[in-house]
Length: 296
Image (cartoon, rainbow, N blue to C red):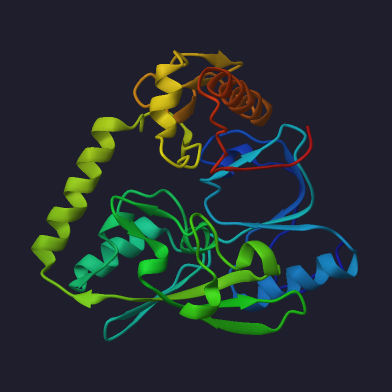
């Protein structure tokens, strides 16, 4: 293995547990794991995996993801060291690994409005684009101007707003295999104090309603048409129900929290239990917002 990477490339970790990198604090081992510090390192990692015909999984903060206990085959790339931000007028351009919370704070500091909704979202810029994340009346597609990605042939391609195919919790990158490396957001000039007040109000509401003291993935299910997932779960009497170390939150029924060394399999099994119970009671099929991946 000593010849597969140059001295400037990131350290490649073998048989590494994913749980410490995940918001849920759950997940099995990755065959290989790397945290690139530059675009060139990212390209080298993708090329290395392609040469060996290994599957590649690219993540930011792993905040909307359940990794099963059997872990992930191939190479896991975590983008959190790619996090630079540049400003050009009302445009903010951020690397994919930048925390969306941090980016919203930078926008506030520069007197730019439009990212207040992201002030409490525990994910990366890349993850927010990939999933078209949103909260409190805001959403990624409202401010995303363009996104640059490394395509499967390792070429860089920039997608315009119209090419991003945004939909509810969906973007074009769920279909085209592109690895998001940078996103540009078009914001508006605003008053710093008013922007901060809106961010504070959103975070207060979040702290009031959500179980922030436990590891979780945030809202587990997409909103079913005509219903609220959390209310269906609450009305089914499922709050406090646990599988292994993972429990349906007693504070917000739409959340599942890791209260006692829960595993990825615990999360998945609890998701299935909730789906089955809600369907039995209300004939509504809950669709996970979180992605569930890996081997059992």
